[in-house]
View 1 (cartoon, protein in one colour):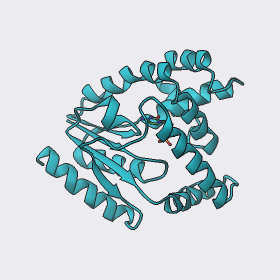
View 2 (cartoon, protein in one colour):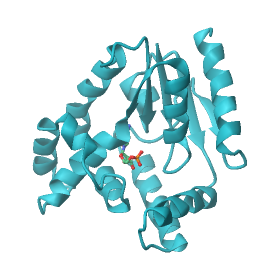
View 3 (cartoon, helix red, strand yellow):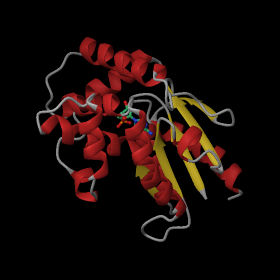
Length: 212
Ligand code: C5P
């Protein structure tokens, strides 16, 4: 059984999908970390994440240890990720890993929750339950700002909003696997919901789809 949770930056999909996975006893894959790891490998080696040859090389050599590297959650890593993520050959190289995880979760769990941008449209179009999580840009910028501040990053809220709008634009306008809801996705706007209320709404939808 597969549950997909897609949406733009800081819509709440990470927290929601982790809670859903724990609640269902499913494995969880944050697909954004895969793109972050590839982008950072190139960036940390002094390269440009938009350079196809270097990004492809990093994608081909990706190991589980790369996904646990320090610094992958930083703003710069998100930008590097969205650059490598716009390269079709890189996306193709990373597709198999994601599909294998969904079909055969590594811990033998009976299902998987995947979160990202295209998990319901491209990675797992046949998923049993698909959520598309959104929130107003100002609300998402506020959440991201507080998160970055708590981690000690020095960045203004206006800069966070500008970065978020730029990344949403790149993710939504790219030619391959753009950010958009699957036709059969359930839309959940978390702008005016706290995390518990968002989780209850998501869980009710998923439980109905999985017959649990
Ligand atoms: O979700 P997160 O912010 O960690 O994702 C980082 C970047 O990776 C996104 O901005 C997007 O460009 C890319 N991504 C993607 N497809 C996914 C997950 C992430 O293109 N399934």
